[in-house]
Image (cartoon, rainbow, N blue to C red):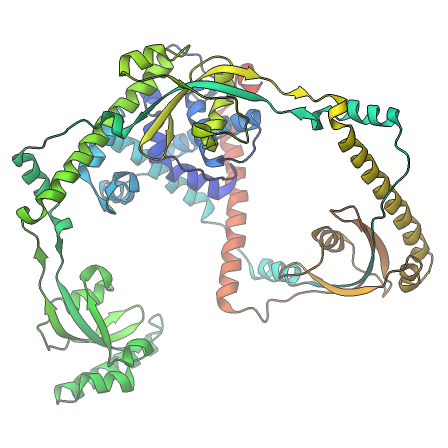
Amino acid sequence: MLQAIRDKAHGIFAWVMLLFVGVPFGLWGINNYFDGGQEKPVAVVGERDIFERDVNRAYESLVARMGSSDYDEKQLRHEALEQVINLELITQASHNEGLAISDAEIRGYVQSQPYFQSDGKFDKDRLKSVVASQGMTPQQFSSQVAGQLLNEQFVRGVTDTAIVTKLQLDNFYRFRNQERQIEYFTIPLKKADGEILDKDIEAYYQANKSLFQNPEMVSVEYISLSIDDVSGDFQPTEEELKTLYEEQKAQYGTPEQRNVSHILIAADMDKEDNAKAALGKVEGLRQRLAKGEDFSKLAKENSDDKVSSEKGGDLGVVTKETMDPNLAAAAFVLAKGEISQPVKTPFGYHLIKVTELVPANTKKFEEVRAELDKSFRRNAAENKFYEAKQKLDEMSFEHNDGLEPLAKNLNLKIAQTGLFTRDTGVGVTTEASLRNAAFAQDVLEGKNSPALEVGSDKVYVFHLKEHQPASDKPLADVKAEIIAKLRGKMAQDGVRKQAEQLLADVKQGKPLADAAKSIGVGVNKSTVKLSGKTDLPPALIKAVNKFPRPQGGKSNPSSAVMENGEQVVFILTEVKDGSAASVDAKELEMAKDYLSKNAGQAEFNAFLDYLRDKVGVKVTEQSKQ
């Protein structure tokens, strides 16, 4: 279920992600809402206590999304706490505003979630098993989903109100399409072969020990649980298979299909005159068809759907679900060969002709019995796996000082890994999310990890076996590396001093070409743009774009350090502001949407600050550490 998606934990998109991964997140941590226990809160939002378990769930979700990327555990835990606090602020505010979600909206959202689908279709049994495996009643689950949708409704109520003016759009393109003309030359690095003293090597080593370390390593004991471990030999009865067949009957058939042709007269339907003219033309064509003219010929000559008109208006075989609702409503009541009345859609007016009927067909129970048996066995195995996984997670929390009770109770074997780092591992620990979990603070302190999911059919619990903190490498082992670094620094210092002198010469009036010639290089000219591809080094582009524009026709020189240590001396000769005049309407709309989202994000962040002050948020000193 968990996906390694690296997301920033800020902004509108993070909030939408947080809200819409709500089903798995909610399933994972919902028991905290019904059982606070005697645990001391780590934060209080209004009158609602936030517990360490709430934060741990959010943290584990963030870790899973980070995947193999490096992250600061302390910072990520802080972000997890902030997420939980902000989500609680949103929840309280949405309830205070009296927002409501209908049963139909809840049902539609749940049925769209892949966690509750089999073969791309909603599976009621799968929903039941997942909800039951999490120890929830259907009412609790429905309430959880309603809360998530209410929160999303509340967020959208703030973010979707942002307005972008024409002036803001013009200013955006003034900078985005801006062009800056420069002349420049590059001062290359020269190999530094001066003497490197032992005392300098020692000083560098002592000042930069963190660069020369053996990485932190751990090994763990672990137990694993897979769906194969608990699948057993499920033998469905004939009655159970027939019940499943009735529930999934729609999956074993094809809906009614029709071969449809159409003629489209396109129009801007928001303009009454355009729509009226299109309707008049369609009615005229229908009269001609009624007199016996050929539909295919009229479609080729008159239809504005250029793709289908080449085939006489033929749209091929369609179902109700694949057509525009208005077209489907008309097409699926026609007899073969019959032509519809004019049909209105957002694109204009249509005439529809049905050229072939393909009735619905459903396979008989006997034809799909083997498939039903397989589906039943899979669902039963998944149900049992979810139950065992839930039990494993609970026991890991209750007996968190070792794996023996878990292994004994669930009849699982304890295995172990060799030493591995945060970045690399073998076997089980090639999975980045498992490595990250092994280095979590709770595990390093000797506690069991929570149940760690890999894919949708395997789960692990880790317990620390050995921890080797990062250690300094001996100076003798890294001496050659330090000498190389010091020589590199000498080369860069030499280039920097040379650049400072040449820049001073140019500022005093020396032509750029003469300054370049003095070191045996030539001058280049280029145009720097904020958008579009360029061969210029990123560091040069950044420096040029930050540099103030020339005043009074006078160009000012500057310099920039490149990623490889080289230096560039440049003159900004001209700045041409961009314009939105040549931007097509589609791109303008995308830019407006982008600016609107940014503005909405700013407004939402400000509103969160307001809620924080209004409701009151207290964070314990321990959780701040």
